[in-house]
Length: 325
Image (tube, rainbow, N blue to C red; front, side, top):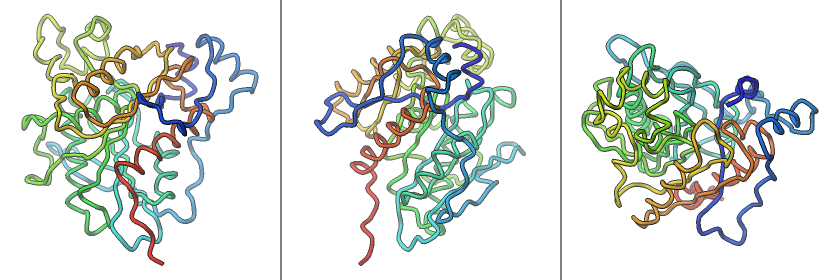
């Protein structure tokens, strides 16, 4: 991916659905290349979102909540919720990207504030990065964040049976691991033992589905994430960290979002995931946005489309309760 475009930011990629309904929103037109996107951004014809948008007045933000502790390392999240909340609602856990080695939970402020305003309780969690602890630490931390949400459901008016994992890039991979992987070794011991870490929906925004592909095997970021080991040294580690290996017919509905000129995570990863979900008859939506790259939803037209697609997915699988008259 072009370094200058990375400077614009790291967020999600987007897409629509396999069996697309007639009322599916029209995706914004894309570009022929990353250079064309850079040119559009430079000329001002491509509007970029404000990632530090002011917090809406009707949203309460509680920062730096310790959701767990991993060997003396505090794990923290920020929690966004509607100011006036008088009944349990679904919760959304946003997991940031950054190749498992960088990024921060505040990267998703634009989304978390927006979805809290729509009526959800929304968390964005930090997790141990590669430099602090390699795989499976990040998966264990994110599972702990789900357990924290469920353990504190009554306090924050969360429906414990309606929790979704949402993430982009590395966060998309971790969201799939939350949705599909039931291995006890991935639970960790960071807190809230005995509480389920299951989620009831997954939004995968161009995350890695299969860590055993050639491009994954050759990636320095993947190698660092997987304890510094090559595929030849630890093939089982690459397989265990692949959402593909864990996916079965009992797993939750999934929304896949991906652009076709993604040079970081090839769209073929999501093509294969969609085909696997279809074979297992798991409810899912998959959209391939023609001509958009890895960080595409920093572009406002894509972000608008992204939120509308998630709105529709959540309305079907994590509906908000009707307001009292």
